[in-house]
Length: 557
Image (cartoon, rainbow, N blue to C red):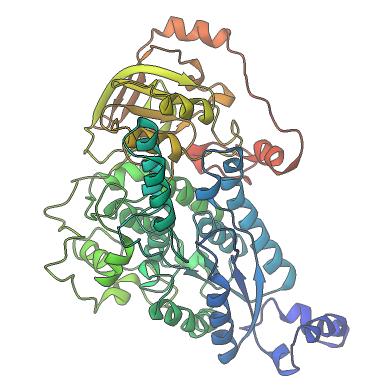
């Protein structure tokens, strides 16, 4: 078996002299043409702290690969910032970027015949985008997480600033205090520091087996993150020698491991969307109901923000997520026989992992958890025939019934909250924000943070066909499918309708007679203005339901 399955077609033989001449122009030697070529996909960008250091890591990876019997080729893909665009029209491009990243990685690697791939991601959509690209290409691949940011000296972060905005709107703090928190809360490189979407997805990918053990919890600026990158050359060389591909690692059982890890760590609702999309890309049959099935037996044990008290950097100091995985494995909650990018099984990787220090307070025991079953609840009912995803820890209760306050855009809903128009007992409904309706399925961190900042987190519920930031907490339900844009029941809600959310029976119910709903459906008019050109128009045309991962290449949807 050749180790140069793809590159040999581009660089071997006299008829490929022209191809080789181009590569000599970027620094290839005659000897390099005899080596497997490994693409290094960097998501470096100065648009966000999450990715501003990625090229430093990519250069370490490049050197590591070149020091093995391989040749690295470094290239870039895009990143955008959820944190900067949150609450604006720009946020419509966020989920779209996942597809652009996947498409660009597939395009470069497929075009240029790389035999292996290492991708380095540092923000929410980089990670699933890279994994989707790897799945489509299905050649030896390894993911490296850019790492987590450290919290400020006052233990504040980006989400703190969002919630302080709500306090300011309520009149509890001054503008000067708001700006002071703004100035201290995000310092230097790294992804947002709680168990928000970036750290959630990094943890899921490690549990999936597609990153090196320990990769997901490391600080962005640290020696162990540099060491992680230095190990990349040996790791990808081994994968190429074994011809171990994503399809060998990303199995149904491996996805179940990833789901288990996400639940145990109290991870983001976005993990549901992204894991469904990653599974679709590799051809694994994963469904919303798999999250419910697994969640019944997996407790939440991590006291990490947004609903906990700690940051990922603190967990890193205690050993990262490997001891959590070992705890879960020892209780037969993980499939230990799943292969990983080390060439070993998950169980083999975890064999010598020591338990956490008994004095640490971040990870609880499986016998005395924060919550006995999953915080990620998959709800069904007449408001969500195809499902919805709730993030309910139990801190706010497990059931809610209240009167609808309906808004047809995030901006309108957020303004009403800031204007103190939302009262205890209300169910805030923000619709026409689904994958097609947005288009782009915006995150609702600004309105949910405003609710928390005004002290209404346990008094108000929030439902949407959009999605949430990993920093969102409270009584929230997103990904409601079918979405309003395609005539889903959420489009039929009117002000003062009663809505019941039950995270015990897993139901989302609009308490309105069916005859009335049918009459409303007959009179329903789509109020959305669709983009006519550009990436959002293409996305709207191609994207499928959130209940299936909002993928853009399942043409039979």
